[in-house]
Amino acid sequence: MDDSSISDSQGSDGIFFNKQGKFCIPCTAFRGFQYVAAGLRTRYENYKSNQGSSPTVIMNDNDKIPGSRSYLKEDPPDVQKLGVASWDFLHSMAAKYPDQPTVTQEGEMKEFLKIFSHVYPCHWCAKDFEKYIEKHAPRTKSKEDLSRWMCEAHNSVNGKLGKPKFDCNFWKQRWQDGWED
Ligand code: FAD
Image 1 (tube, helix red, strand yellow):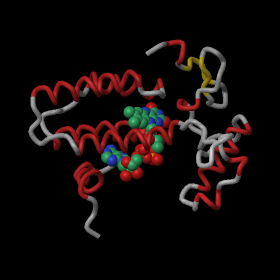
Image 2 (cartoon, helix red, strand yellow; image 1 turned 90 degrees about the vertical axis):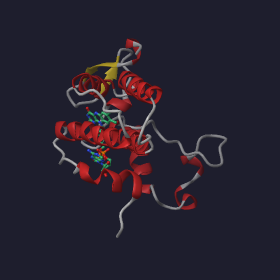
Image 3 (spheres, helix red, strand yellow; image 1 turned 180 degrees about the horizontal axis):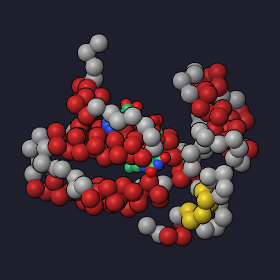
């Protein structure tokens, strides 16, 4: 990854800045902050609190990108939003992996995960994920293997963040079949 684009300093308030001194949004957890750049924070809060509402209710012209009838002035995702979306993708990808992959499919998956850990746009998350992969090689022999590996990888981040571990016996209900009740 191009070093010039990654953030390299953290302010005392936990906000990350890149080498150009710009605020690094994907590296930053908004949830715990008392303040960030006011406009950004307000738009983020408005967007979050309005998620799930009818677009006709939440949209006024000022909320929209100039010249657009439908696109809101959304800000780039912070570390949590990016994380949820990325785990959605990673677990869903594992749940769609073949039960009996070919050698090529196994190789591609390993390569993908390695590259993913290099390009993940929260650089300190990426570095830890890269180390995790080095220590715990992705298990790619089957969908079951990969899905459980992904669950364990996610649990290692959960542990780091002080969150409870997810019971990996339920990976299939959560990421493939859904729940009966
Ligand atoms: P998430 O942890 O995003 O989970 C989303 C949903 O997945 C949960 O609601 C649950 O239903 C399900 N789930 C939870 N755990 C598991 C599991 N083990 N297996 C299967 N399903 C599960 N954030 C940081 O602050 N620091 C980091 O270093 C960091 N590293 C990350 C590395 C990667 C590769 C990724 C993809 C994300 C990383 N994140 C990191 C983001 C972090 O993991 C969370 O996504 C973010 O904190 C939001 O958490 P959440 O509690 O909303 O749900």
